[in-house]
Length: 538
Image (cartoon, rainbow, N blue to C red):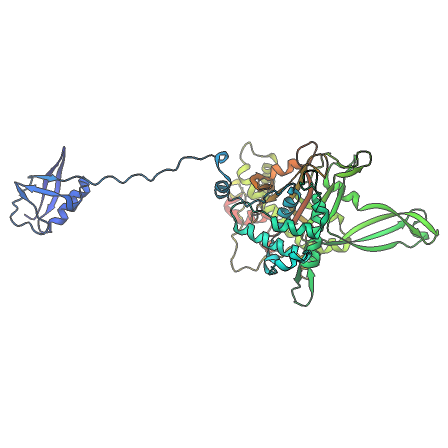
């Protein structure tokens, strides 16, 4: 009989009815014993009636069914569980550990009241086109130019090298070279207080000077490759028409004067009536000035009405929070709370011609917002969810004749072979904004009572986040010089002012972008009807 069962005794254990096939080499039986006891075959000594079982043959071994076999040998040590690192809380991590755990971008070291410069650079760095163009136009060799005093070209090169260092580093970076060259190019930023420490500076003045450097020393090439246009002119500069009317003569007596002006910032002047950013921007489009009237032969007051004719891809808005107090001789700060939003629509500030051009992309963004709102509201439409979402669902299901099982409709998956979505800019004007709608991507704040004191921070939205129906849930980064921490969009909205907390001083809005071509998709309610089909009818 070649197949039988035996009992195996090992130490204090006994394994019953262990199968044995004597037609196979003993190694197979020893492998079975290994699976039962954990004793490797090379350590096994198998005793059958006083005889030792060899590895290669059963000859000389008289094995009968139900016989007891003795196994000698020690089992292998059980593998140890992988070492579990001790739990380390975020507040106990150092800078490099925190950056690795949360994937934080690196900060910039404060070199003595240089927070204004650090905050400005972090906000500028949030513009992806600027990072790309600086990388492509990186200039070689700073030594000679720096030794001769530097200038805008060298400063732009230093910005390129500094951004490259930030891309590669997991820790904070010291901007010594950039600071030295900025002081050489703009000595007003190199003033020192008693004790030889650099004085605090106005971050908006720093922003304006750096943007001018990019305008004069950082060209970009048009799509056709024939004309060079500066980065600032293409991506940060808009234009507007201004109609001047003499208040004494009126448009009937004297022809109106039409001017074309460019801007790299819009200003929000803060007075007692301004509680919201959009109100301040709208008010700034209407102003008055004094100029010579040819009809009267003297100076007269003119009303000025402005309309935007070109929107830049990246729109900078300044809250005019500082004013000069003659008695104290300081730039005092307006602490008033002025609300702003995470999205901005400036359609009403545009000329009629530009409004007509903006409509096609605006319609697609509206369609995208409908889909996003329905997808976002799917989890909230249960009992206790927002009444708006539930009401929208009820209205849509009533209109389409579908039941709740087919609501909300699912957004079709992206087709890899589909054409790309419409660009955020006009085809004949790269770097423009083709919708009039913006998404906030960076905020520069000030804490303190004067522009020449206090502390500046940068708050930057995390890049490459998908479109979200609720941008308050988006991830942002707070740059407090070399200390970087994550925050949310809801935290950004608390920077509107009203106290000694950080107040928004500069807002940088970027273009809202489509993730697909929505012109070929039906409205969500129509999609619901088609997906519900006959099964969804009442």
